[in-house]
Length: 428
Image (cartoon, rainbow, N blue to C red; front, side, top):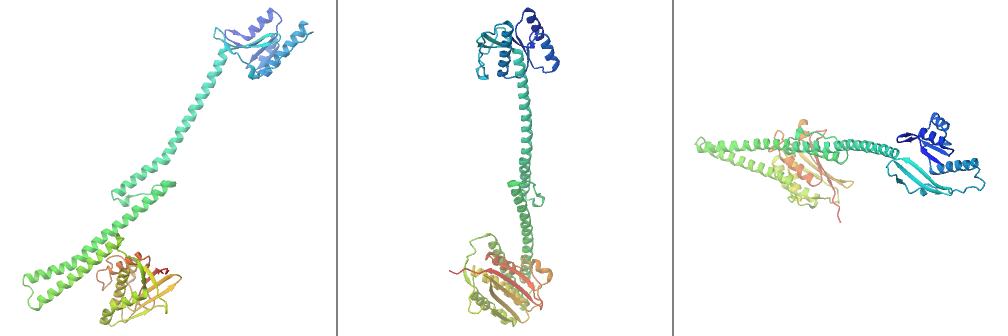
């Protein structure tokens, strides 16, 4: 029995089938990948007893071989005794080897009637291997290209925002705060970029405030220094005589005191902004603090003919957490400022509402100019009769260090109001 492939090296399977059939009657099964009707009919017409299309299972091949052998036995009259066959599974196909000429793969399997030998050209196997290898290489190349493009995309999404962020940080380092741009990114990088952008804005505002502070400070210091220098030179050169000399000395002393006050207030502001240990927080009785404030400003009030009214809750003492000396300084600054513009009266009202202490200082003067209200607590902002322009700025810094709020408004009936808000201290 012959089981052959149509495609054979050096010979056409159809031609081999024809030669075998000319030699005698032997069962022939042709194997081919060609599955069209013309090829099948041609193979059968040339003498093939069966035609099997690849791919196929070993079970199917064995079944076809068995059928052809049984048919051949019946035709030759040898079927009287019967023939027994053993089913062959894919796991029992073994002993594959290559012929000495290197052109075939042979499978030898024993059967009751002898030996079944299957031959497959090596060229076919190698062609299949090459095709599979080519497809594998193509898949690897495609996957590699996709991974490369994906890595480029991910790198661009991750690295590019970091590079942009680095450039913006360089601008911050070089103090070009206004040139800093917002870096668009997602996730944690976006959060960092937002922080850098906001930080640049804060640094720019701080830089502008610092410049303005130094400009105002130099102006405020220059004015008393010029007065001191002018009178000192006049006295030295003999320009002032008699009572004018004493008047000049009084001016020098007055301007020196004013200069010292400005320096003291500037130093206090700088410490409040930068030093943590300058603020000693403790439980402070607001009732006692208001009493001390009244005693401190009483000489000024008597001099100006003003009356101070203090209103606190009856039979209730109010406590806040603050630095007592610093908060006293803030209240003195606010009350002194009110005394500068009040006509007859100054009112201080304190109350407790929902765990918050509300405190207000009001006067019956002309009130704050509307254009000054937005910047009233800024440094070196002063009204018509103001002194250094630092008193209310110091009050604001102290109140905020106490965890409170301060704001300024005008009353409808006339006069100015400065309001405070503090969290009430929780007494144990």
